[in-house]
Length: 130
Image (cartoon, rainbow, N blue to C red):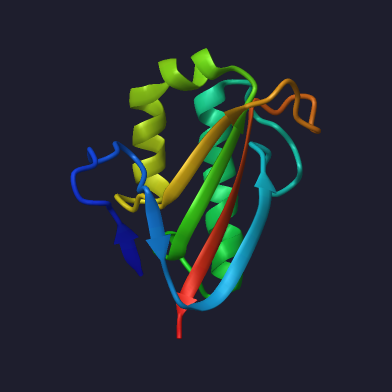
């Protein structure tokens, strides 16, 4: 995996500008903050994000992959301000589950998610090296 940083560009915080990778591709659908029983245990943004990330790790494990194989991550959030204000706690939850691995990442505010109680939905693409 090669992280792409054009010369002279400021280094992004918490993500990479681009990633080049070769190998088996794994696509994880949008994960929300419910547990393995499909139940939301919290309406708190950070709690739901932590659970969504844990769900991603569980799906990756099924492919023999881990967080270090993630090359792309997209966050869909209901409230941009809620996402930005959660910075420190969200960063701690991210590092707890994903580590200090920062793939290419996008965050998008949306008007609604399909699951009514969901505050965030996260999807990833991972690549296991050949």
